[in-house]
Length: 123
Image (cartoon, rainbow, N blue to C red; front, side, top):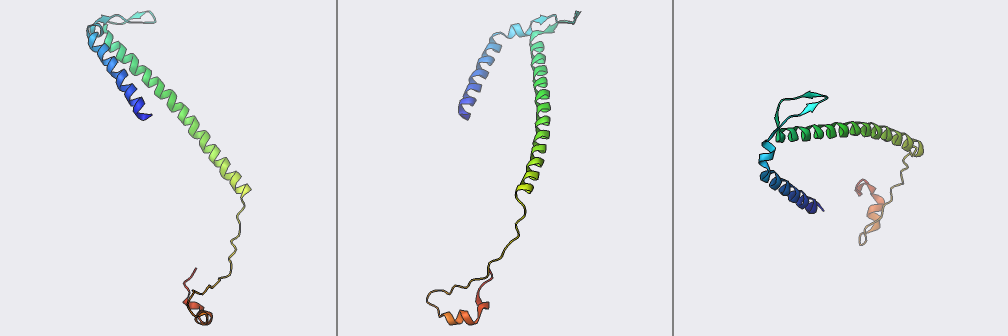
């Protein structure tokens, strides 16, 4: 899937590059831009397009950042709630130790182990 996406990005990027190269004279053409009735000085169309793309990317970044902060806060609250519910549903269980069982190794005499349990490694 990753290669398919990379291939699509390369194809689209190449197509855009060809369009820009073919129409480079259009991008250098100066246009007049007005904001709320105020006319700005003549600006190259390519610069105007670049600034609009950067402004759009900045807006998307800000919106994504705000959403990430909200999700992080919600995730933190949900983790705290989960920890509280786990403590309520799983009370600590006291550990119970089973008595040590000595099993002699086959082929060895059992009286050696029965008389000296200190030969066993600790469990």
